[in-house]
Image 1 (cartoon, rainbow, N blue to C red):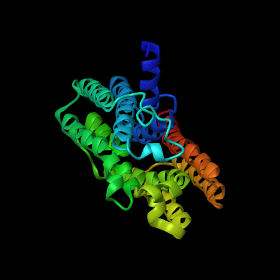
Image 2 (tube, helix red, strand yellow):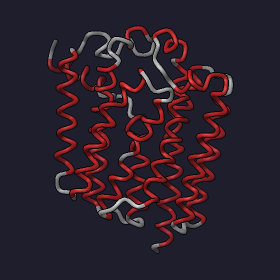
Image 3 (cartoon, one colour):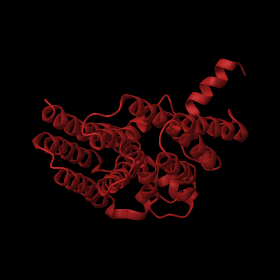
Image 4 (cartoon, one colour):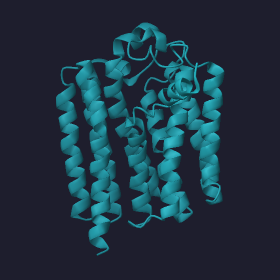
Length: 289
Protein backbone atom coordinates (compact mmCIF):
# COMPACT_ATOMS: atom_id res chain seq x y z
CA UNK A 1 0.00 0.00 0.00
CA UNK A 2 1.43 3.38 -1.02
CA UNK A 3 1.63 6.33 1.39
CA UNK A 4 -1.04 8.17 -0.61
CA UNK A 5 -3.42 5.20 -0.35
CA UNK A 6 -2.78 4.90 3.40
CA UNK A 7 -3.42 8.60 3.96
CA UNK A 8 -6.65 8.32 1.96
CA UNK A 9 -7.80 5.49 4.24
CA UNK A 10 -6.91 7.59 7.30
CA UNK A 11 -8.88 10.50 5.85
CA UNK A 12 -11.93 8.28 5.44
CA UNK A 13 -11.43 6.79 8.90
CA UNK A 14 -11.48 10.33 10.34
CA UNK A 15 -14.51 11.16 8.10
CA UNK A 16 -12.80 14.27 6.76
CA UNK A 17 -14.59 13.50 3.51
CA UNK A 18 -17.92 13.85 5.38
CA UNK A 19 -17.82 17.16 7.28
CA UNK A 20 -21.38 17.00 8.66
CA UNK A 21 -20.10 15.69 12.00
CA UNK A 22 -17.66 18.58 12.29
CA UNK A 23 -20.46 21.06 11.64
CA UNK A 24 -22.83 19.47 14.16
CA UNK A 25 -20.09 19.71 16.77
CA UNK A 26 -18.99 23.17 15.66
CA UNK A 27 -22.33 24.99 15.88
CA UNK A 28 -22.95 24.56 19.63
CA UNK A 29 -19.32 25.51 20.27
CA UNK A 30 -19.83 28.71 18.27
CA UNK A 31 -23.10 29.40 20.13
CA UNK A 32 -21.14 29.31 23.36
CA UNK A 33 -18.18 31.30 22.04
CA UNK A 34 -20.46 34.20 21.05
CA UNK A 35 -22.74 34.06 24.11
CA UNK A 36 -19.88 33.77 26.59
CA UNK A 37 -18.08 36.75 25.04
CA UNK A 38 -21.14 38.90 24.28
CA UNK A 39 -20.34 38.68 20.60
CA UNK A 40 -16.61 39.35 20.89
CA UNK A 41 -14.81 36.00 21.14
CA UNK A 42 -11.04 36.20 21.56
CA UNK A 43 -9.58 35.32 18.17
CA UNK A 44 -6.93 32.95 19.58
CA UNK A 45 -9.41 31.08 21.79
CA UNK A 46 -11.84 30.84 18.87
CA UNK A 47 -9.10 29.46 16.62
CA UNK A 48 -8.08 26.91 19.27
CA UNK A 49 -11.65 25.69 19.64
CA UNK A 50 -12.33 25.50 15.90
CA UNK A 51 -9.21 23.40 15.29
CA UNK A 52 -9.92 21.40 18.44
CA UNK A 53 -13.40 20.54 17.17
CA UNK A 54 -11.93 19.14 13.95
CA UNK A 55 -9.30 17.11 15.81
CA UNK A 56 -11.65 15.69 18.45
CA UNK A 57 -14.39 14.86 15.97
CA UNK A 58 -11.81 13.05 13.86
CA UNK A 59 -10.51 11.16 16.90
CA UNK A 60 -14.08 10.30 17.89
CA UNK A 61 -14.78 8.82 14.45
CA UNK A 62 -11.66 6.67 14.65
CA UNK A 63 -12.59 5.40 18.11
CA UNK A 64 -16.16 4.79 16.95
CA UNK A 65 -15.00 2.62 14.05
CA UNK A 66 -12.58 0.77 16.34
CA UNK A 67 -15.43 0.02 18.75
CA UNK A 68 -17.74 -1.05 15.90
CA UNK A 69 -15.15 -2.94 13.86
CA UNK A 70 -16.99 -6.24 14.41
CA UNK A 71 -20.42 -4.74 13.71
CA UNK A 72 -19.77 -2.49 10.70
CA UNK A 73 -19.12 -5.36 8.24
CA UNK A 74 -22.73 -6.46 8.79
CA UNK A 75 -24.29 -3.05 8.05
CA UNK A 76 -24.74 -2.07 4.41
CA UNK A 77 -23.86 1.61 4.97
CA UNK A 78 -20.68 0.93 6.96
CA UNK A 79 -19.17 -2.26 5.57
CA UNK A 80 -16.73 -0.35 3.34
CA UNK A 81 -15.29 1.77 6.13
CA UNK A 82 -11.48 1.34 6.32
CA UNK A 83 -11.46 -0.70 9.55
CA UNK A 84 -14.46 -2.83 8.60
CA UNK A 85 -12.93 -3.55 5.18
CA UNK A 86 -9.53 -4.41 6.68
CA UNK A 87 -7.72 -1.53 4.98
CA UNK A 88 -6.56 -0.11 8.34
CA UNK A 89 -5.54 -2.26 11.31
CA UNK A 90 -7.01 -1.80 14.81
CA UNK A 91 -3.55 -0.88 16.10
CA UNK A 92 -3.19 1.84 13.47
CA UNK A 93 -6.61 3.20 14.41
CA UNK A 94 -5.73 3.41 18.10
CA UNK A 95 -2.44 5.15 17.36
CA UNK A 96 -4.20 7.61 15.06
CA UNK A 97 -6.87 8.39 17.69
CA UNK A 98 -4.19 8.87 20.33
CA UNK A 99 -2.21 11.21 18.08
CA UNK A 100 -5.25 13.33 17.28
CA UNK A 101 -6.22 13.54 20.97
CA UNK A 102 -2.68 14.57 21.90
CA UNK A 103 -2.71 17.35 19.32
CA UNK A 104 -6.04 18.59 20.68
CA UNK A 105 -4.63 18.60 24.21
CA UNK A 106 -1.51 20.51 23.14
CA UNK A 107 -3.76 23.13 21.56
CA UNK A 108 -5.45 24.02 24.85
CA UNK A 109 -2.28 24.19 26.96
CA UNK A 110 -2.20 28.03 26.72
CA UNK A 111 -5.69 28.18 28.31
CA UNK A 112 -6.61 28.18 32.00
CA UNK A 113 -6.65 25.27 34.46
CA UNK A 114 -10.44 24.87 34.36
CA UNK A 115 -10.34 24.26 30.61
CA UNK A 116 -7.62 21.65 31.10
CA UNK A 117 -9.71 19.89 33.76
CA UNK A 118 -12.80 19.90 31.55
CA UNK A 119 -10.73 18.57 28.63
CA UNK A 120 -10.16 15.36 30.58
CA UNK A 121 -13.93 14.90 30.83
CA UNK A 122 -14.30 15.73 27.13
CA UNK A 123 -11.72 13.11 26.19
CA UNK A 124 -13.45 10.49 28.34
CA UNK A 125 -16.81 11.29 26.72
CA UNK A 126 -15.39 11.08 23.19
CA UNK A 127 -13.60 7.80 23.90
CA UNK A 128 -16.46 6.10 25.73
CA UNK A 129 -19.45 7.13 23.59
CA UNK A 130 -19.00 4.42 20.92
CA UNK A 131 -19.25 1.72 23.58
CA UNK A 132 -22.52 3.05 25.03
CA UNK A 133 -24.42 1.51 22.12
CA UNK A 134 -24.02 -1.82 23.92
CA UNK A 135 -25.96 -0.90 27.04
CA UNK A 136 -27.68 2.53 26.89
CA UNK A 137 -31.22 2.61 25.51
CA UNK A 138 -30.67 6.11 24.10
CA UNK A 139 -26.93 6.47 23.45
CA UNK A 140 -27.74 9.60 21.45
CA UNK A 141 -28.16 11.47 24.76
CA UNK A 142 -24.57 10.59 25.64
CA UNK A 143 -23.53 11.73 22.17
CA UNK A 144 -25.22 15.07 22.87
CA UNK A 145 -23.07 15.55 25.96
CA UNK A 146 -19.91 14.60 24.07
CA UNK A 147 -20.75 16.77 21.04
CA UNK A 148 -21.75 19.70 23.25
CA UNK A 149 -18.89 19.71 25.72
CA UNK A 150 -17.30 22.54 23.80
CA UNK A 151 -20.01 24.67 25.44
CA UNK A 152 -18.80 24.53 29.07
CA UNK A 153 -15.21 24.51 27.84
CA UNK A 154 -15.83 27.72 25.85
CA UNK A 155 -17.29 29.44 28.89
CA UNK A 156 -14.39 28.22 31.01
CA UNK A 157 -11.89 29.59 28.47
CA UNK A 158 -13.57 32.96 28.06
CA UNK A 159 -14.92 33.59 31.57
CA UNK A 160 -12.96 31.28 33.86
CA UNK A 161 -16.23 29.78 35.09
CA UNK A 162 -19.19 27.78 33.81
CA UNK A 163 -22.49 29.53 34.66
CA UNK A 164 -25.97 28.01 34.64
CA UNK A 165 -26.70 29.20 31.11
CA UNK A 166 -23.82 27.07 29.78
CA UNK A 167 -25.30 23.89 31.27
CA UNK A 168 -28.74 24.79 29.90
CA UNK A 169 -27.14 25.26 26.48
CA UNK A 170 -25.57 21.84 26.88
CA UNK A 171 -29.02 20.46 27.72
CA UNK A 172 -30.39 22.01 24.52
CA UNK A 173 -27.62 20.34 22.55
CA UNK A 174 -28.41 16.97 24.13
CA UNK A 175 -32.02 17.14 22.94
CA UNK A 176 -30.90 18.35 19.51
CA UNK A 177 -28.45 15.45 19.22
CA UNK A 178 -31.18 12.96 20.15
CA UNK A 179 -33.37 14.46 17.41
CA UNK A 180 -30.82 14.45 14.59
CA UNK A 181 -29.10 11.22 15.53
CA UNK A 182 -32.42 9.39 15.80
CA UNK A 183 -33.05 10.50 12.21
CA UNK A 184 -29.65 9.04 11.40
CA UNK A 185 -30.40 5.84 13.33
CA UNK A 186 -33.64 5.34 11.39
CA UNK A 187 -31.47 4.69 8.33
CA UNK A 188 -29.86 1.64 9.97
CA UNK A 189 -32.69 0.47 12.23
CA UNK A 190 -33.21 -2.90 10.54
CA UNK A 191 -29.48 -3.71 10.49
CA UNK A 192 -29.07 -2.55 14.11
CA UNK A 193 -31.92 -4.82 15.22
CA UNK A 194 -30.18 -7.80 13.63
CA UNK A 195 -26.79 -7.21 15.21
CA UNK A 196 -28.05 -6.13 18.64
CA UNK A 197 -26.89 -2.51 18.83
CA UNK A 198 -29.05 -0.18 20.93
CA UNK A 199 -30.23 3.10 19.40
CA UNK A 200 -32.95 5.64 20.11
CA UNK A 201 -34.68 4.64 16.85
CA UNK A 202 -35.14 1.15 18.29
CA UNK A 203 -35.98 2.30 21.82
CA UNK A 204 -38.61 4.82 20.71
CA UNK A 205 -40.19 2.26 18.39
CA UNK A 206 -43.44 3.44 16.82
CA UNK A 207 -43.22 6.66 18.84
CA UNK A 208 -39.99 7.67 17.09
CA UNK A 209 -41.43 10.63 15.19
CA UNK A 210 -43.16 12.01 18.29
CA UNK A 211 -39.92 11.66 20.25
CA UNK A 212 -37.96 13.53 17.58
CA UNK A 213 -40.54 16.33 17.51
CA UNK A 214 -40.46 16.64 21.31
CA UNK A 215 -36.67 16.76 21.29
CA UNK A 216 -36.67 19.58 18.75
CA UNK A 217 -39.25 21.40 20.91
CA UNK A 218 -37.13 20.91 24.04
CA UNK A 219 -34.06 22.20 22.20
CA UNK A 220 -35.85 25.36 21.13
CA UNK A 221 -37.42 25.81 24.55
CA UNK A 222 -34.09 25.63 26.37
CA UNK A 223 -32.45 27.95 23.85
CA UNK A 224 -35.35 30.34 24.34
CA UNK A 225 -34.80 30.25 28.10
CA UNK A 226 -31.13 31.14 27.62
CA UNK A 227 -32.19 34.01 25.39
CA UNK A 228 -34.66 35.25 27.99
CA UNK A 229 -32.06 34.99 30.78
CA UNK A 230 -29.52 36.98 28.73
CA UNK A 231 -32.13 39.49 27.54
CA UNK A 232 -31.54 38.69 23.89
CA UNK A 233 -33.50 40.62 21.29
CA UNK A 234 -35.69 40.04 18.25
CA UNK A 235 -32.78 38.89 16.08
CA UNK A 236 -32.06 35.98 18.42
CA UNK A 237 -35.68 34.83 18.50
CA UNK A 238 -35.90 35.23 14.73
CA UNK A 239 -33.04 32.73 14.49
CA UNK A 240 -34.98 30.35 16.73
CA UNK A 241 -38.06 30.81 14.53
CA UNK A 242 -36.05 29.87 11.44
CA UNK A 243 -34.67 26.85 13.31
CA UNK A 244 -38.22 25.83 14.25
CA UNK A 245 -39.26 26.02 10.60
CA UNK A 246 -36.27 23.86 9.67
CA UNK A 247 -37.28 21.32 12.33
CA UNK A 248 -40.78 21.18 10.85
CA UNK A 249 -39.24 20.55 7.44
CA UNK A 250 -37.28 17.64 8.92
CA UNK A 251 -40.47 16.18 10.35
CA UNK A 252 -41.97 16.35 6.87
CA UNK A 253 -38.97 14.58 5.38
CA UNK A 254 -39.03 11.68 7.86
CA UNK A 255 -42.79 11.17 8.10
CA UNK A 256 -42.67 8.00 5.95
CA UNK A 257 -39.44 6.80 7.62
CA UNK A 258 -37.83 6.38 4.24
CA UNK A 259 -34.10 5.78 4.90
CA UNK A 260 -32.91 8.19 2.20
CA UNK A 261 -35.19 10.96 3.44
CA UNK A 262 -34.19 10.32 7.05
CA UNK A 263 -30.54 10.64 6.08
CA UNK A 264 -31.36 13.81 4.16
CA UNK A 265 -33.02 15.25 7.28
CA UNK A 266 -29.98 14.32 9.37
CA UNK A 267 -27.62 16.11 6.99
CA UNK A 268 -29.89 19.15 6.89
CA UNK A 269 -29.49 19.69 10.65
CA UNK A 270 -26.44 21.83 10.00
CA UNK A 271 -28.90 24.53 8.89
CA UNK A 272 -30.73 24.24 12.22
CA UNK A 273 -27.48 24.91 14.07
CA UNK A 274 -26.58 27.69 11.63
CA UNK A 275 -29.96 29.38 12.13
CA UNK A 276 -29.48 29.46 15.90
CA UNK A 277 -25.95 30.82 15.50
CA UNK A 278 -27.14 33.39 12.97
CA UNK A 279 -29.67 34.72 15.47
CA UNK A 280 -27.03 34.95 18.20
CA UNK A 281 -24.46 36.63 15.97
CA UNK A 282 -26.98 39.08 14.51
CA UNK A 283 -28.21 40.07 17.96
CA UNK A 284 -24.71 41.03 19.11
CA UNK A 285 -23.89 42.68 15.80
CA UNK A 286 -26.92 44.95 16.12
CA UNK A 287 -26.46 45.41 19.87
CA UNK A 288 -22.83 46.45 19.50
CA UNK A 289 -23.37 48.95 16.70
